[in-house]
Image (cartoon, rainbow, N blue to C red; front, side, top):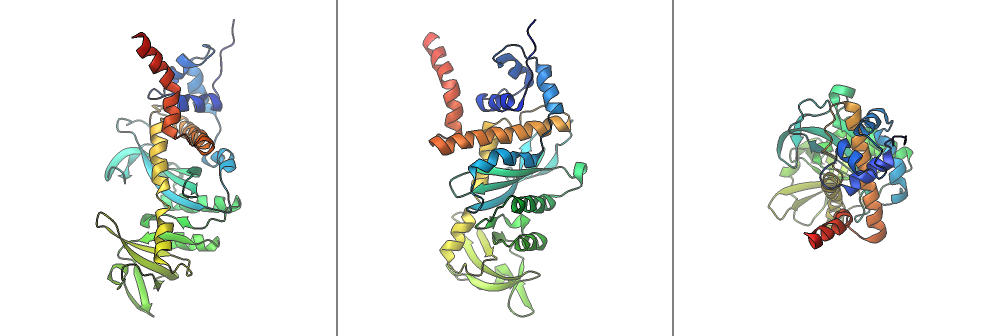
Length: 324
């Protein structure tokens, strides 16, 4: 009697890469090449595999230059609209949806040089399980990044993560940051006379050196977006006096939005129906590893993540059409 095939990370990762819309253990058991693996083997692996978020580094490390590029932090929500019984899912605000949704929150740390998209660490936002908020995860990942030898050009993040504790944590690492400040953040041009940054007289195209309350000297500028929204950019780098340079550095945080979209559209990260926390964690870890495989091939060949997936199914579609 043939021995039943066991599931493993490489098999599960490649299944996530190859599949288009059916990411269940049952589907994997149907397409596994030996035909000797049951869907229960997939379930057992999801429940017993021992991977932690920081383990993604072993797959990401060959794709980055720790002494170059940017570290970008942001969070995303993996939607679980019908998953009332999944332990990790909770109602939380989604920036993409602009409303609260039921889902699993993930705080991500991305390395980029402006053209590459490499997740080097992540944390699940599950305060009911670990008592940690998003800002705790923010600082934990930066601590880990320093131990791994990162010396980024800048650490980039949006105003939600611009608390004094976070800014001071970055300074403690000896790094500089660029972010956008909330319009009510207090700054001063004259000692002890603070005003909201939105009330500061900032001419278009200029950068001013100011005192950020509770932190110290920073550079600030006003940016009006094409849709009319205004952003108040700030950096701890006091040599960053050129307006175009400051805005260009700030715009390098957008690759994390591209990463979030790609992760959700190419790996099936939101398509695991397992109710148990551990199984969801291993599925999410596997999706990160699957994305890194797609990104590695993109860096080597220039083929997009989406084109790589299409190339897998295109021969089958062509054969079907030829015989339909």
